[in-house]
Length: 255
Image (cartoon, rainbow, N blue to C red; front, side):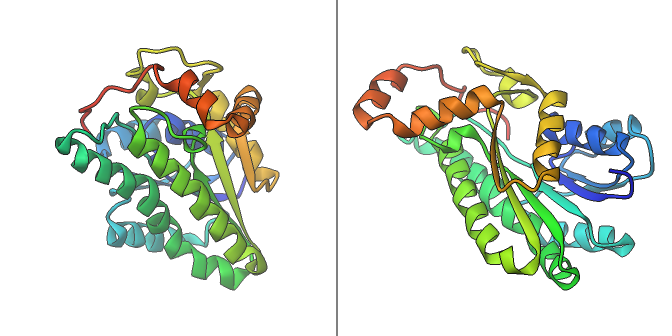
C-alpha cells in the first residue's frame, strides 16, 4: 500500500475511520472527507503520515468537487472509496418521515455520484484507478422499518453495476461492497440481534482486500454472503413471514 493515494468519504467514524487507519498504516496518502471537523481531526491525529482533510457533506456536489480537485493536485488517486452513508428507521405512514427518507437517498445514492464524478475524467486519462462503493446487505431485500435505507442501498448496488460496465473499457475498476452488520455508531442504536457482526477494523481489512483483488462485488463476512444468497431465493410468502416481526431501527434519529 505504500505510495497509494486513497480518497475516502465518511471518514470521521465507523468503517470510514477504520479504512483510513488501515491504509495510513500501510503507507498510503489519504484524502479524508466528512461532515464533522472535530471528529475528522481526531481520526487524523491517530494516523501516521501526512494526510488531507476536507469538511463537506457528500450531498453538496460543489464542495466534494473542490475537495477532489485539491487532493488531485498531488496526483490522481489510485482508489476512491464512497463510504459516506446514513441509516434511520422510516415508516411511510408518517408524513413527518419524508425529510429523513429524502436525506437517506441524497446521501446514500446521490452521494455516490458526487463522490465519483470528479475523479472519472482524470482516471480515464491515465487509464487506471478503482472506485469502490460501500452498499449493504440491506439492499438485497427490503427490510421492514428500513424502507429508506434498504431502497437506497438497492439503488446503490444497481448504480455501481451500471458504472462498472460504463467504465470497463477505460481501465477503471468499480467495486461494490455489501457489508453485513459492522460495529459502528450506525449499528450501536440497534436493539435487536445482529448476527455475524464484525469489528470495524476487521471489516476495513476485508474491504481493502476485496479492493486490492479487483473484485467487482463482495458481501462480507462470508457467513452473511450465504445469508444474502438464501434471501434472494426465498419466495415472497416465506420471506414476508420470516421478516414481518423482525427488529427495526429507531425512527427520528438526528441525521
